[in-house]
Length: 378
Image (cartoon, rainbow, N blue to C red; front, side):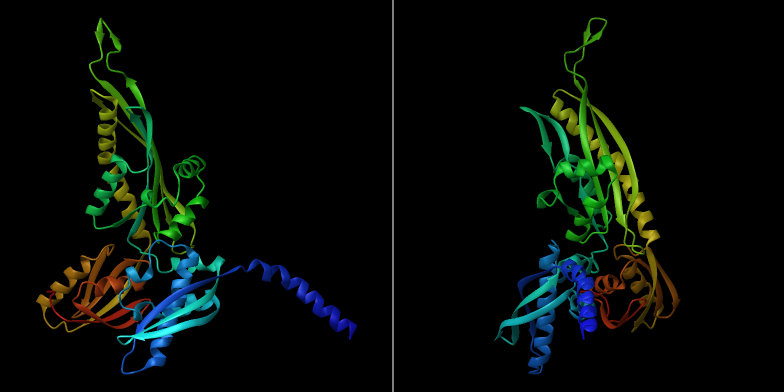
């Protein structure tokens, strides 16, 4: 008997560190679902699933909610079952109510914090790019430090023109400039993992802008002449980082230093002009790196579209598919059958196609989609 007791104590001692390392945070969260055909139990299951996912998001601290980009709940139902089901260790219903055939539930869920962020990242917005480039620039009362500046705003506008979704990190106060500076200098990607999870973005552009006054207005430049303008040089140190969808590791796609110069009566105006020029020069290189990242993470998805019966409709459907952000190629196999080259999770592709308003999802799997074409959008 003593031997058995000793064996049990040894087992408990072995498992104790593991149990202690699994930290759970308990939070209150709510969810709702429509009651269809008076089926209250099914509505409650869906509402509880939504509430569980809301609890996971709350613990993960994400800034972007799953519901903001997935409008059809059935598209994320499997993800919620597999991800939230494993992350939510326990829950209890605090209350429920019905209003206008909408069932609302409130739960208290205990979520494993170490897995919450990873679960949320599974629903990352594949076409989101997080950007944070603070700048030190001359001001009328000394140097100023701007987290949102001409350079970052110009880059965001240029990237948006290409159809990408850009998250400007600066206004959220999710990270400070000193942290970015340390990351750029050291080459460490660890501090940036929080941005990956917080903004559900798989690609981050970070950098730091500094300036020097090469020649001041009125400065003697020789031969009895003085400089009529301020000559300001701005320099950018930057890195482009992305999550490798195969390994899950963060990789450095590109790193570099760029500079530009400008002349103006005031050093503030000269710095502004230089940053504008720097943005124009840098944009093509950034877009090229983004394109390379997409190509390296592309999967081929078989797509069957029901309701396609003539060549004109084939061309119309192909044009719609090609207009989806980050679709790199659309191949026609036969009438109504296509192969779409698309990075990452097929879930996002299905959602993007449905948002066109011309398709109804019939069947979904990680490597194939079946849709019903309903005609031209209104």
